[in-house]
Length: 426
Image (cartoon, rainbow, N blue to C red; front, side):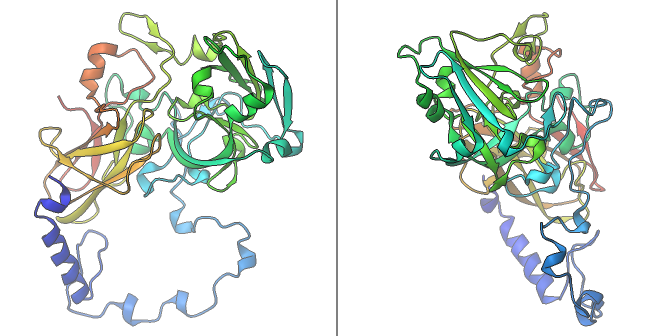
């Protein structure tokens, strides 16, 4: 049953109506302030209302208010000790909606984030084309562009959890992801400008970046001609340096390693190049020691972001909003189920908006919490009919040796005091 039909809505409305009538406020560990005395925050003039605030000249580029200074990217010291070849994590526990602000969107680089001016930017298209071409940034701006919302997820997201519950927080277990609106030119437009062979059977492209690592990856031509973007804006503004300014590749639904930053070259080839990043790296090691490659697509996945270890429940029994994120590299999210008892029973959550293909969806489940412990799980469904699996189901096929493509159901144990921990249930 849905949250709207489970009998809880009337209780929530009654609480909210009662709180307003009593002049109460939901704060701290209490659900509402009973009438019994004036609230000085309402009845007395506060410092912020006694003088002038900052003028517009003080904030030429708006930044988050200092009260939100804990909403930042974080890393794990033992996981990213080398800050040059490093990764950090989006604070997904502290966000709502679906769009990730660029300033706290996860990023990964292999040889440090470089500074490359628009004026110095060049993009070469060569290989099996009629006319090898070089584009400047200004050239790219003259082509018809598109705006698309897509998620970018590192293949190693949740990768530390294969052998057991390790990282305590949604930011650390699932934060190698961001969801942004990208503006750019479809790659197929630029390839058409260079002229493709008439027979595309077996053709691939090889893409590389301008940084020292180059991070070269091979992509089948069918994908290159489908939905791949050469992007130069995100969320309406220029890409951040760490996200590949001034131009990056966007490969919707596929692992983030293929979203080459500081894109400098696209070569049309007769087959995959078999580079370092697609042979010794970004392959899935199975229990018997063999490795799968070409596992590009990110399967349906979800996580509850609140309550979670970094977002404990800070009030007593009563109305509680359970919320989280779901996504699939194969299409749109069509349904998310939530369990509060470790997967014994499931309730269909409410999607904040209809699912978009290869973009993150936000889900909500409103319950009346009785103060007892919870074993919170979420389970995503996508438009192909795929249902997010348990970790045990993945281990039966993949073992525990892998790092990549762990899209298992996550469990948070919420204690009666509202604190939460990363656990496994069987």
